[in-house]
Length: 249
Ligand code: MMA
Ligand code: CA
Image (tube, rainbow, N blue to C red; front, side):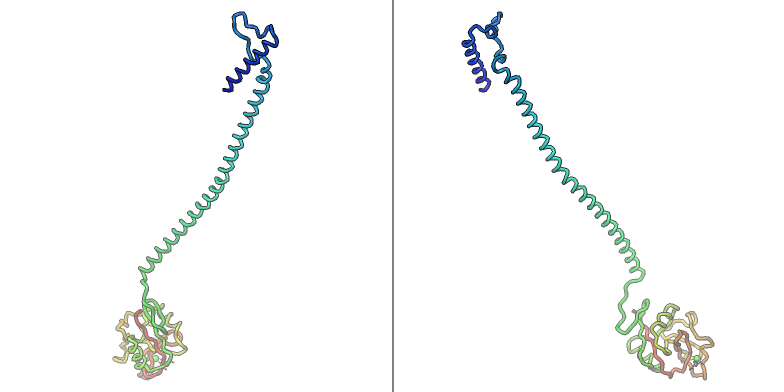
Protein backbone atom coordinates (compact mmCIF):
# COMPACT_ATOMS: atom_id res chain seq x y z
CA UNK A 1 0.00 0.00 0.00
CA UNK A 2 2.70 2.43 1.05
CA UNK A 3 4.80 1.65 -1.99
CA UNK A 4 1.78 2.13 -4.19
CA UNK A 5 0.99 5.34 -2.38
CA UNK A 6 4.54 6.45 -2.79
CA UNK A 7 4.58 5.51 -6.44
CA UNK A 8 1.25 7.19 -6.94
CA UNK A 9 2.40 10.25 -5.16
CA UNK A 10 5.65 10.23 -7.13
CA UNK A 11 3.74 10.00 -10.30
CA UNK A 12 1.44 12.73 -9.12
CA UNK A 13 4.37 14.97 -8.34
CA UNK A 14 6.02 14.07 -11.55
CA UNK A 15 2.87 14.95 -13.41
CA UNK A 16 2.70 18.16 -11.45
CA UNK A 17 6.36 18.88 -12.12
CA UNK A 18 5.84 18.13 -15.79
CA UNK A 19 2.99 20.49 -16.01
CA UNK A 20 4.82 23.11 -13.85
CA UNK A 21 8.13 23.04 -15.61
CA UNK A 22 6.81 22.26 -19.08
CA UNK A 23 9.73 21.23 -21.25
CA UNK A 24 12.25 20.43 -18.45
CA UNK A 25 14.88 18.22 -19.98
CA UNK A 26 15.35 15.80 -17.04
CA UNK A 27 11.76 14.72 -17.18
CA UNK A 28 11.63 14.25 -20.87
CA UNK A 29 11.63 10.65 -22.04
CA UNK A 30 15.06 9.35 -23.07
CA UNK A 31 15.87 8.67 -26.58
CA UNK A 32 15.31 4.98 -26.06
CA UNK A 33 11.87 5.74 -24.69
CA UNK A 34 12.61 5.05 -20.98
CA UNK A 35 11.23 7.56 -18.45
CA UNK A 36 13.60 9.56 -16.07
CA UNK A 37 14.42 8.33 -12.37
CA UNK A 38 11.73 9.65 -10.04
CA UNK A 39 14.06 9.81 -6.99
CA UNK A 40 16.22 12.41 -8.55
CA UNK A 41 13.54 14.95 -7.88
CA UNK A 42 12.22 16.63 -4.74
CA UNK A 43 12.48 13.23 -2.85
CA UNK A 44 16.17 12.65 -3.31
CA UNK A 45 17.37 14.52 -0.10
CA UNK A 46 14.86 12.48 1.90
CA UNK A 47 16.11 9.25 0.38
CA UNK A 48 19.77 10.21 0.64
CA UNK A 49 19.88 11.71 4.14
CA UNK A 50 16.76 11.04 6.16
CA UNK A 51 16.19 7.40 5.33
CA UNK A 52 19.77 6.27 6.09
CA UNK A 53 19.64 8.44 9.21
CA UNK A 54 16.44 6.79 10.29
CA UNK A 55 17.89 3.37 9.48
CA UNK A 56 20.98 4.14 11.54
CA UNK A 57 18.83 5.45 14.40
CA UNK A 58 16.62 2.37 14.23
CA UNK A 59 19.68 0.12 14.15
CA UNK A 60 21.12 1.92 17.15
CA UNK A 61 17.83 1.56 19.04
CA UNK A 62 17.57 -2.13 18.16
CA UNK A 63 21.22 -2.75 19.00
CA UNK A 64 20.88 -0.91 22.33
CA UNK A 65 17.76 -2.89 23.15
CA UNK A 66 19.55 -6.13 22.33
CA UNK A 67 22.61 -5.10 24.40
CA UNK A 68 20.40 -4.06 27.35
CA UNK A 69 18.39 -7.27 27.17
CA UNK A 70 21.56 -9.35 26.96
CA UNK A 71 23.26 -7.59 29.85
CA UNK A 72 20.07 -7.95 31.92
CA UNK A 73 19.90 -11.60 31.08
CA UNK A 74 23.54 -12.23 32.04
CA UNK A 75 23.34 -10.25 35.26
CA UNK A 76 20.24 -12.29 36.18
CA UNK A 77 22.03 -15.53 35.38
CA UNK A 78 25.31 -14.54 37.05
CA UNK A 79 23.86 -13.71 40.47
CA UNK A 80 22.10 -17.03 40.94
CA UNK A 81 25.17 -18.71 39.45
CA UNK A 82 27.35 -17.17 42.19
CA UNK A 83 24.79 -18.18 44.82
CA UNK A 84 24.64 -21.65 43.41
CA UNK A 85 28.42 -21.98 43.48
CA UNK A 86 28.71 -20.95 47.12
CA UNK A 87 25.78 -23.18 48.08
CA UNK A 88 27.32 -26.03 46.16
CA UNK A 89 30.70 -25.67 47.88
CA UNK A 90 28.95 -25.47 51.26
CA UNK A 91 26.95 -28.60 50.53
CA UNK A 92 30.13 -30.30 49.36
CA UNK A 93 31.95 -29.48 52.60
CA UNK A 94 28.87 -30.62 54.56
CA UNK A 95 28.89 -33.93 52.73
CA UNK A 96 32.63 -34.35 53.42
CA UNK A 97 32.15 -33.55 57.11
CA UNK A 98 29.18 -35.90 57.43
CA UNK A 99 31.05 -38.70 55.63
CA UNK A 100 33.93 -38.33 58.07
CA UNK A 101 31.49 -38.34 60.98
CA UNK A 102 29.80 -41.47 59.68
CA UNK A 103 33.17 -43.15 59.19
CA UNK A 104 34.32 -42.36 62.74
CA UNK A 105 30.94 -43.43 64.18
CA UNK A 106 31.20 -46.68 62.25
CA UNK A 107 34.67 -47.32 63.64
CA UNK A 108 33.48 -46.45 67.15
CA UNK A 109 30.46 -48.71 66.75
CA UNK A 110 32.60 -51.59 65.45
CA UNK A 111 35.07 -51.32 68.35
CA UNK A 112 32.14 -51.10 70.81
CA UNK A 113 30.62 -54.26 69.32
CA UNK A 114 33.90 -56.19 69.50
CA UNK A 115 34.43 -54.94 73.07
CA UNK A 116 30.97 -56.15 74.05
CA UNK A 117 31.68 -59.51 72.43
CA UNK A 118 34.85 -59.86 74.47
CA UNK A 119 33.29 -58.65 77.70
CA UNK A 120 29.49 -58.93 77.50
CA UNK A 121 27.50 -56.56 79.70
CA UNK A 122 26.70 -58.06 83.07
CA UNK A 123 23.83 -57.77 85.42
CA UNK A 124 24.29 -54.85 87.79
CA UNK A 125 25.22 -55.58 91.38
CA UNK A 126 22.60 -54.98 94.11
CA UNK A 127 22.65 -51.79 96.17
CA UNK A 128 25.52 -51.68 98.68
CA UNK A 129 27.50 -54.17 96.53
CA UNK A 130 30.58 -53.32 94.48
CA UNK A 131 31.29 -54.69 91.08
CA UNK A 132 34.68 -55.98 89.87
CA UNK A 133 35.05 -58.00 86.64
CA UNK A 134 32.44 -60.76 86.84
CA UNK A 135 31.71 -60.51 90.57
CA UNK A 136 29.78 -58.43 93.07
CA UNK A 137 31.28 -57.77 96.51
CA UNK A 138 29.67 -56.94 99.83
CA UNK A 139 31.78 -55.21 102.49
CA UNK A 140 30.20 -55.63 105.93
CA UNK A 141 29.68 -52.63 108.17
CA UNK A 142 29.85 -54.64 111.40
CA UNK A 143 32.15 -57.33 112.78
CA UNK A 144 31.34 -60.95 113.45
CA UNK A 145 33.22 -64.20 114.15
CA UNK A 146 34.15 -66.31 111.14
CA UNK A 147 31.18 -68.71 111.34
CA UNK A 148 28.61 -65.93 111.65
CA UNK A 149 30.30 -63.94 108.90
CA UNK A 150 30.10 -66.92 106.51
CA UNK A 151 26.49 -67.47 107.63
CA UNK A 152 25.70 -63.85 106.81
CA UNK A 153 27.03 -64.40 103.27
CA UNK A 154 25.06 -67.63 102.75
CA UNK A 155 21.90 -65.83 103.88
CA UNK A 156 22.48 -63.59 100.82
CA UNK A 157 23.14 -66.69 98.65
CA UNK A 158 26.88 -66.01 98.53
CA UNK A 159 30.11 -67.03 100.27
CA UNK A 160 33.03 -65.27 101.90
CA UNK A 161 35.34 -63.83 99.25
CA UNK A 162 37.80 -65.97 97.28
CA UNK A 163 40.84 -63.96 96.14
CA UNK A 164 42.13 -65.29 92.82
CA UNK A 165 44.40 -62.51 91.52
CA UNK A 166 46.54 -59.53 92.44
CA UNK A 167 44.04 -57.27 90.59
CA UNK A 168 41.16 -58.58 92.68
CA UNK A 169 43.25 -57.99 95.81
CA UNK A 170 43.87 -54.37 94.79
CA UNK A 171 40.15 -53.84 94.13
CA UNK A 172 39.20 -55.34 97.51
CA UNK A 173 41.84 -53.26 99.26
CA UNK A 174 40.21 -50.12 97.88
CA UNK A 175 36.84 -50.84 99.59
CA UNK A 176 37.91 -52.31 102.94
CA UNK A 177 37.47 -50.46 106.23
CA UNK A 178 40.28 -49.82 108.69
CA UNK A 179 40.58 -53.25 110.24
CA UNK A 180 40.84 -56.91 109.33
CA UNK A 181 38.25 -58.74 107.18
CA UNK A 182 37.43 -62.44 107.09
CA UNK A 183 38.01 -64.10 103.71
CA UNK A 184 36.75 -67.52 102.56
CA UNK A 185 39.87 -69.49 103.48
CA UNK A 186 40.33 -71.83 106.46
CA UNK A 187 42.08 -75.03 107.67
CA UNK A 188 39.58 -75.88 110.40
CA UNK A 189 38.86 -79.33 108.92
CA UNK A 190 42.49 -80.43 109.00
CA UNK A 191 45.42 -78.35 110.31
CA UNK A 192 47.56 -77.02 107.48
CA UNK A 193 45.08 -78.07 104.83
CA UNK A 194 43.92 -74.66 103.64
CA UNK A 195 40.73 -74.68 101.60
CA UNK A 196 38.86 -72.00 99.76
CA UNK A 197 35.14 -71.82 100.56
CA UNK A 198 34.09 -72.34 96.91
CA UNK A 199 36.46 -75.29 96.33
CA UNK A 200 39.10 -73.28 94.41
CA UNK A 201 42.38 -75.24 94.50
CA UNK A 202 44.56 -73.69 97.21
CA UNK A 203 47.89 -75.20 96.11
CA UNK A 204 47.79 -73.76 92.59
CA UNK A 205 46.25 -70.39 93.53
CA UNK A 206 47.97 -67.09 94.24
CA UNK A 207 48.72 -66.44 97.95
CA UNK A 208 49.27 -63.21 99.84
CA UNK A 209 50.26 -64.42 103.30
CA UNK A 210 52.05 -61.93 105.52
CA UNK A 211 55.69 -62.95 106.21
CA UNK A 212 55.87 -65.97 108.57
CA UNK A 213 52.12 -66.63 108.20
CA UNK A 214 50.19 -68.80 108.57
CA UNK A 215 51.80 -69.60 111.95
CA UNK A 216 48.81 -71.15 113.76
CA UNK A 217 49.77 -69.20 116.83
CA UNK A 218 48.86 -70.95 120.05
CA UNK A 219 47.56 -73.70 117.81
CA UNK A 220 44.16 -72.01 117.56
CA UNK A 221 44.39 -70.11 114.26
CA UNK A 222 42.30 -71.77 111.54
CA UNK A 223 40.66 -68.81 109.76
CA UNK A 224 42.29 -66.42 107.27
CA UNK A 225 41.90 -62.67 107.67
CA UNK A 226 42.81 -59.89 105.26
CA UNK A 227 44.98 -57.36 107.08
CA UNK A 228 44.75 -53.62 106.46
CA UNK A 229 47.66 -53.60 104.00
CA UNK A 230 46.23 -56.49 101.96
CA UNK A 231 48.23 -59.41 103.35
CA UNK A 232 46.80 -62.51 105.01
CA UNK A 233 47.10 -63.86 108.52
CA UNK A 234 45.65 -66.92 110.18
CA UNK A 235 43.72 -65.95 113.30
CA UNK A 236 41.40 -67.57 115.83
CA UNK A 237 37.99 -68.04 114.14
CA UNK A 238 36.12 -66.62 117.17
CA UNK A 239 37.70 -63.21 116.69
CA UNK A 240 35.31 -60.51 115.52
CA UNK A 241 36.23 -59.11 112.14
CA UNK A 242 34.61 -57.31 109.25
CA UNK A 243 33.99 -59.63 106.34
CA UNK A 244 33.60 -59.61 102.54
CA UNK A 245 31.07 -61.66 100.53
CA UNK A 246 31.51 -62.35 96.82
CA UNK A 247 29.01 -63.59 94.25
CA UNK A 248 28.88 -63.90 90.50
CA UNK A 249 27.45 -60.82 88.76
C1 MMA B 1 50.06 -61.35 115.43
C2 MMA B 1 50.80 -62.52 114.75
C3 MMA B 1 49.79 -63.31 113.95
C4 MMA B 1 48.61 -63.72 114.78
C5 MMA B 1 47.99 -62.51 115.42
C6 MMA B 1 46.85 -62.92 116.34
C7 MMA B 1 49.18 -59.21 114.95
O1 MMA B 1 49.63 -60.43 114.44
O2 MMA B 1 51.39 -63.34 115.72
O3 MMA B 1 50.41 -64.47 113.40
O4 MMA B 1 47.69 -64.43 114.01
O5 MMA B 1 48.95 -61.81 116.15
O6 MMA B 1 46.21 -61.78 116.82
CA1 CA C 1 48.66 -66.04 112.42
